[in-house]
Amino acid sequence: MPGWLVANEGKLTVALDITVSDELLREGIARELVNRIQNIRKSNGYEIVDKIVVEIESRDEINEAVKEFSNYIASQTLADSVLLSSNLSNATELEFDEYTVKVIVKKVQ
Image 1 (cartoon, rainbow, N blue to C red):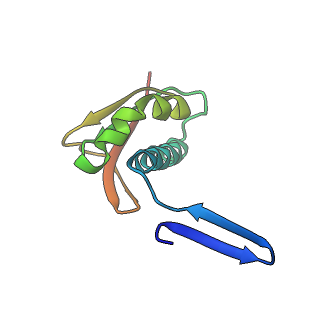
Image 2 (image 1 turned 45 degrees about the vertical axis):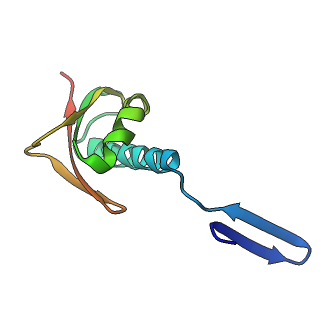
């Protein structure tokens, strides 16, 4: 069946709907950003309790995900704010799935 992954073993059959909805895609982008921001925190030597500010390059393909899940991203990364910005310089370039996006993570003083 299109959009389903089916496996059989004996009398047991399992079917999974593998269709990725727009909402699920946006959530996946947000989760990937959280993971990458946490890696930047670690590589910058920030402590787990350090508050940060996150600026994410404004890109049509991820803007909706960042807007919808900004509170989630902030809570998971201990960010005071998560902002969409244009023309980021001195940013870390992230590549995941088919996306390339620049991110700045700054420690709040």
